[in-house]
Image (cartoon, rainbow, N blue to C red; front, top):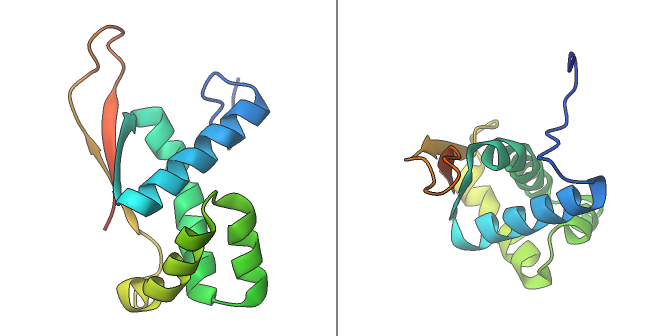
Length: 116
């Protein structure tokens, strides 16, 4: 049973899962939209929203936490510079998940996750 289990396992060990979520988060912040499976999109949503919330805070400690998670240093600085005018008045809900057609081959549910 998976009652009260908050971590999406994604069928991977913990280190691979963390690397996958970090890379998907970095790509989503860089490009604004990523096509992936629905389960991965739901898992990466919480991580990206945490990074945007850290950027809205704007403190040095928040910047260091974001630098420890996102792979690209210049991307973190750009995120902290641009997030105030883009998401300043919004409390959460920075991403949108749009379901698309199933993947050919294994029939996995696909989705597009994008920043709003």
